Every structure is written in C-alpha cells, then in structure tokens.
Length: 88
Image (cartoon, rainbow, N blue to C red; front, side, top):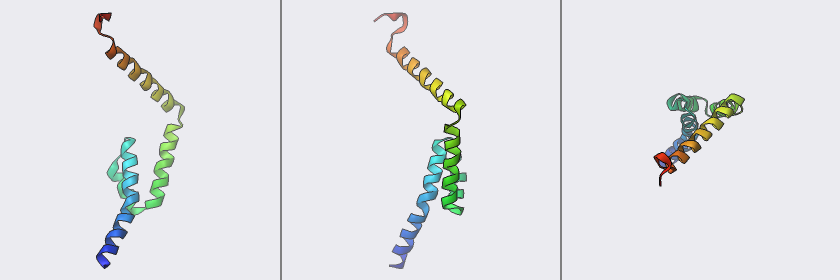
C-alpha cells in the first residue's frame, strides 16, 4: 500500500518537470536543463519557460522569420509538384 502511494506521488511530482523539459526541447532549448530546473523549482520553472517562449514568439523579428520560413516551405512544395522544365 505504501509503495503504491509513493509511486503515485512520484508520478504526480514528475509530471511538471517532464512537461517543462518537453516544451523546452520542442523550442530548441535543453531538455535536461529545464527538466532539472523543473525538479528543483517545479512551478516557477514552468512559468519562467513560458515567459521566455512568449517573449520570443511576440518578437517582431521572430514573427517575420517564421513568415519567411512558411513562404519558402510553400514555394518548395509547389516546386516539387511541377516537373522540371514545365513538362507534364
């Protein structure tokens, strides 16, 4: 019984560090650094990470870069559809 409660407590306690680490990794930051911060400061590290990511996303330069990447991706996809030389 005690082991079940301890295991449930460990799973609940590790949810936030794993979430913080995953979010950091998906935005190009170190998983292990943010996982460690999530273990030491669980709630605070979560809010700090999201503040950093929000600041990056709201930066006008980052928005223009994302828009340029989307335009290039659409042009590459269109280029793959049309055969070379325009022949069908």
